[in-house]
Image (cartoon, rainbow, N blue to C red; front, side, top):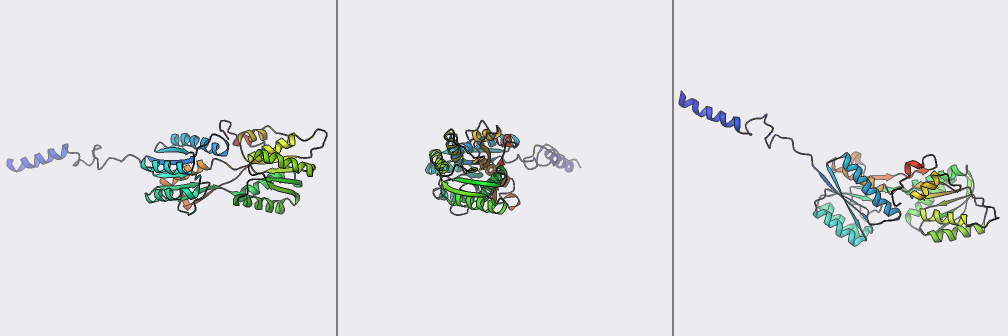
Amino acid sequence: MKSFLLPLLLAAAFCLFSSGCDPSSGSSGNNAPSAPRRWKIGVSIPASLQGWSGGVVWHAYNAKEEMEKTDTNVNFMISTSSDAQDQAARIENLMVRGIDALVVMPQDPESLMTVCQQAKKKGVYLVVVSAPLPKEIQDVSVNGDNAGFGSAAADAMGRALEGKGSIVVVESAPSPANTERMDSFRRTLAAKYPGIRILDSRSASGSLEKAQSLMEEFLRKDPGIDGVWACDDEALLGALQACENFPAGQLLKIKALIGGGGAHRIIRKVMDSDPLVKAVVTWPPQVVREGMKAALDGLNNGKLPPGGRSRIKVPSRIVFSDNAKEFYFPDSVY
């Protein structure tokens, strides 16, 4: 009997002290819960210390700080680049560092196509922000809404002029985006504010000096202008300078300058109830924040866009003095 029991006792003792035989043991490598995956998300954006692109950089770092505090299982690796060639090289470096997702704002979409294809082949979840690639290989695209931008500007003008008056437009540089914005602006005015008439509309190509010169020409031609839509920040500042330089003694009829973009110094004018700058329609550099959020959401959803949202449009908002504080970021370079 003793010879029969001895092997059983030895076996029981082995199981007692072996982590593999005790299903309740917390030290078992097979049964202990695994640690959550720490996602690595690369963010590739242009290097800039000024203007709208500078705002993108500021909002990227601001979003990184906020989102990493909220979710400790994500690490955003922000990489800024001087040009498209530098951007491609830095994206390759991010891939070597083992990123799970890439948020990219291409400086030259054509030049970035190859490296983005390489990222996709490596299984990297790809989010393209602002500038679309020549081929739609991305998982998610994030952009502003050009038609919505133009329509919002028309609504802002309609509210500022109470639905009637004569206006001029200082357009952005000629591009498909500018055409889409202007078409939407005109359609909305015609449909909702037929009492507003466009006297002239020309491009200043994003130049403050050209905008000022163009606005001076508009005023010489017709000093009875009621409103101005300046489609970008530089256009607004140039148009404003022309109005402020208007000869003393001559009646300046302008009731409202409506801006486009949303630099903080212009938002501040709206917030302070500037006598001319009545409103701004945003084209937010926060698109990069939306891209970063889309990348994290996709990784947490098995590398699939939550709800099938593969195209995200960031809406333009109308900023008047009553809501300007919501859009005022004085620490941003933009």
